[in-house]
Length: 271
Image (cartoon, rainbow, N blue to C red; front, side, top):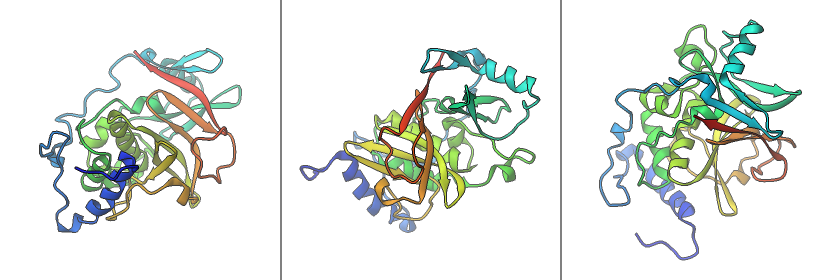
């Protein structure tokens, strides 16, 4: 495919995405990989979601900026001691009254660090940046956790589980999208914050000087790769990728996902 000189690959994919997603009503575009081979998006789900958290909780840990390490076993012990081990909602984990990560319960009814949900699941490795967003718009239906899991207001799905189960809410969509984009080599991050006063999760992807905001839960045709600077209604509080957790220490009334107000609070390690 010929691309205009001076246009970044991701920007070019964004322009194509606007065209291709608009064709959904007509059956959608034909998707091919970098080798020109057809991609069956109906087969992106794994045969089984897998045991993403089968390893001991001590193998999933965060390192704070002061060098201290906390593993998920510590989290479980602290929640049990406080009588909160059946708290089925995501919350900020504090150290010395400072947020260092987000902890959320998974489908296994255990609490995990936010980064741990990005398990490295990449359905296809040789596709363009618009394909993951397009695949999610086709394959996953938005549904609140409290409707899916009675008695549990919030349970997170790993990126692998998100492609296996047909329903999920905002963080499930965002986790699946960000992990796939990271696997394609992009600087993608899950963002936690608010939109119109309601808690929400979305994805940003950095491409040179540009930052795009990807709304994985938006099922409307043509809603693809808008510039983050054009969406001040999104109020970011924290963001994470597979290894790092950032906190917005400045105003949430910002469209800047790169500035000095974004402080690294912890780094995740697995194994």
